[in-house]
Length: 460
Image 1 (tube, rainbow, N blue to C red):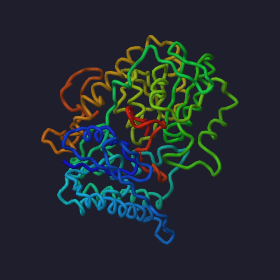
Image 2: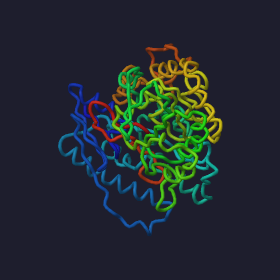
Image 3: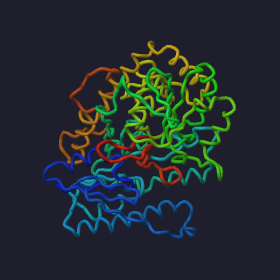
Image 4: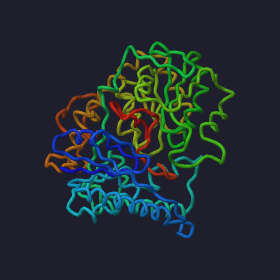
């Protein structure tokens, strides 16, 4: 069987299923990606390159579509080179967010086409317009936002199967298409992302932290409003005043992955650090930049309280990984998060904009660690039940790609009423990102490590 993966940042979300297929006898696996894509053992990778194009004469509404058509053209050439070498895909798995899926049905009319449905742009109940501090643009902006979905809709119209990582992400798509979108997370390797009583983490200064220390962790692909960096920073003065021994470990990059750009010449990191800088002890605030995956997990393993905040947008891998490690997660009470965390059962929820409430929750967790021990256990069990790579997510994805009759039906991957921390339905499939101004990319990573043997994609 020949399987093709198409993703500009390959392997991204396809890492686990691509590796598993490449290891199977009789499988030939290839991938198409942009220059940011990375090779994997046993997979033939063909990279395409977009040339600079003057789109100034293109209507602003159509400029993204113009770029996506140029990307589709390059995918067409890359796929033609593969077919010329006798690689004819039996199945294709493609991210539908950048136009790369546009030529696939025309060139491979008989192939099984599975499209990864990460996010559907819109105003209602999503990230745009959510934060009044960063208001959305007017009608023109709404139209342009809506038109970002053009190539996604074309891919959905032609695919055999869609797959979304969470129910909420599937719910962003038009109702007419949701029945053909299965819900199946990429999964977390729980044998690696697991609790450890003996973990230690080295700060940039050289100081070693362990679980005996009071450690607050925060991780995001980049420090920006969409992932609640501004809310977290504004909570630090109250937290640090109440807990004079607490160490703050902040993992991530200094760019902008999603949403609004900062003012020219500035970064969101510097803007909000400057806002609170004279009210916090900077000797206890540690920005680590990008981390190798195992170092990132060590930070989580020694965490006393982990903060995860997000607008209504794609759910970060990091929150699942933090739960798998057994963190006490204090998270934003937003729709994507509520699918994973139930307040006071397997984590704690606070309204996104409630800076004082966030600070007080973190302080209470630090002051009464034993009281929250059951949340750590329940968080780990939630991941084992719903998001375990080897037992649940990878088998489900392999079935979807190969078109097995046992593949999860649309929307059936997660049992809505499975109690948190239970093993109910353990043998059934459970339901368990942007280079442009606002697009999902799958490159969402806070690390710079090797592909093998552990993943380096951490945070959407």
